[in-house]
Length: 184
Image 1 (tube, rainbow, N blue to C red):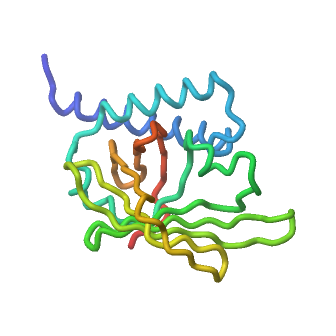
Image 2: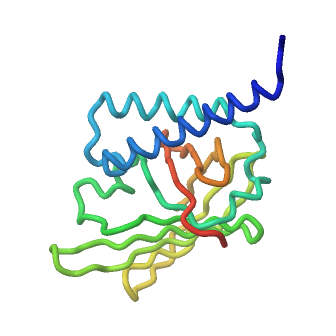
């Protein structure tokens, strides 16, 4: 006999397992900094499986989206800091849907001595039920603020969000796995 409750419970268990596997692997490979091609394929597979289990395609309306998120994994070399000074601690992203604002922040270690906070603020413009245009506003390095050029624009498609985890795809083909760090 067909049991809808059993099906729902199995889907929830599957989601929970995929989320845990995705976070475990992301942490093991240090956000993607030390991934092998096999790790990259495994992340991509888990990422796509979780996207398919998304019950809410209108992710911008999700009550879970506005929060401070911790970057667990990305394919973006620039965000990972490949070839640059190492990042220390968490790479955080604040998303404020109500005010259509975002802020990315991190601490970078220069010359293996100085730890300097860096951040960028942005305005968000909804483009679809799950995608926003990101207009960067101000880049900050320590106490120095630099106004962003009008061409500093990106897009972010939030393909999955729940109380624990957020998956997004950027306009340059990068994927992002973030865990909830703190409520707003």
